[in-house]
Image (cartoon, rainbow, N blue to C red):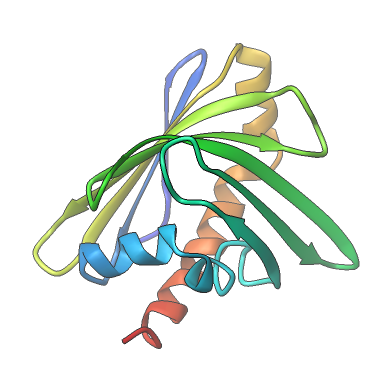
Length: 152
């Protein structure tokens, strides 16, 4: 299954994707630095700094095609293994911060991952869509599919 994108409003985007792995494994892959570095950046090398707790911060730096792409945010809510809420900011465009809720739904050995992003305005939402967000998410999830097969 590939990433499905829905525009919920002028300021909201929802991405969903089914992952062929149990919820706890998918949760761990999303919330632990030792796993995130293997798949988060579309499968490219990623430096991961992660303090996964409410109020904790994260910073991911993807290395691709001789460039670096840095993302950062703060965790606002954590309900293991159902969901977490975080802010998200691309350091290349500072000040454009969205709030993202990532939910993990158990589907009998598979997991539905639903990510809902809320932007400050329609321009920020459209800019994210035009940046290749959906393709990048699918590439990362394909890398996650491969990586999950190696996890214990």
